[in-house]
Amino acid sequence: MFCPKCKSLLTPKKEGGKVIMACSCGYTNKKVEANTTLKEEIKTEKNSVEVVSEDPETLSLTDEECPKCAHTKAYYWVVQTRAGDEPETKFLKCEKCKYTWRDYD
Image (cartoon, rainbow, N blue to C red):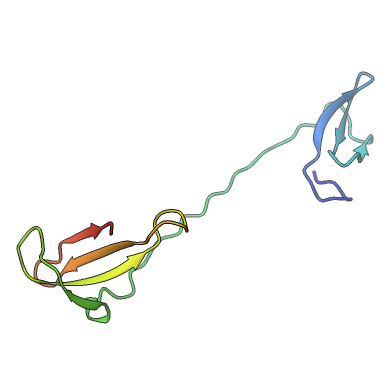
């Protein structure tokens, strides 16, 4: 049940031996009987992630040595993985063996 004034969730509260539904804004619903049961239902939707394209040619190519195969070309992209006042993380993907690693400069 939700508060008609502020749309918050009403919570059960005892008042003079009766259980009423009350809101933090001050609204009370005194018409609810004490034997009313509240049922909570949590619905989960499974969202699947679909990869549209794994085309690394759309990424920029740079001169960087792969730590796995020692190839000298890698694709790169940057992502803000930490707080906004810290530098972004540079991800690199080897052109030859497709190994991916991070560069925290």
